Image (cartoon, rainbow, N blue to C red; front, side, top):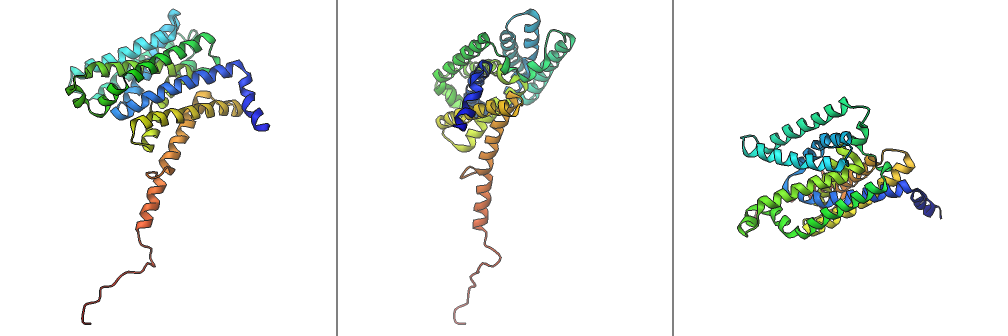
Length: 299
């Protein structure tokens, strides 16, 4: 009975049920997309887009339009700018990404600092999931549903792109369009995640679930399922931890995901660090182990 009361008590508050719904929506979308980001080596791109949306969010607040519009415009613009600089220079992709996202992030900080009375910096950077309104909840749910629908409809093409871009091109797939589509969905996912955990922590939601699932399975379909399962459990655990421990909700969710990753990295068979250590010890003879001595014939 006490356990039931412990579970039900937080759900009696409307703001907390909305926070749970928004966090679950953002977590599921980010987890599914993170599987492709991990396979394609685009983790840094997720970091770049999440930081590059700050000036868009700040300008949206100043103008008085939904911040998701400004975030998506600047997220998509950052992707286009990175692609343009990369294709017209000799710089490596990680260098271009670093230059572009730091410049845009700095521009956002400059806008925020010049209008302190209109923008709450902590709200933008770390989210305000407990203050989500019904309208914002529906916005997140619709954007999340749109992103998931496109990902699932194009799943086979995007998966082939992730595993073998050359083969995808030979089969007649438009690899440039698929890459642009995936990057556009990344920008949408960042917009969804912003409401839950803010600009800084959304990076973890776009990387950690996929990385954790990658350590557990080599099947991409199972990787998607595992990533979603882990992130849903972490979202629920984070919401309850934030309620009972009185800590930041976004931080609690990300910490729960990090705990899951650490547990898998250390303990999951057969490739967990502990299991690898035990296998090495099992193959290494102990100091008192008997050693076979070859005796020459006729001795």
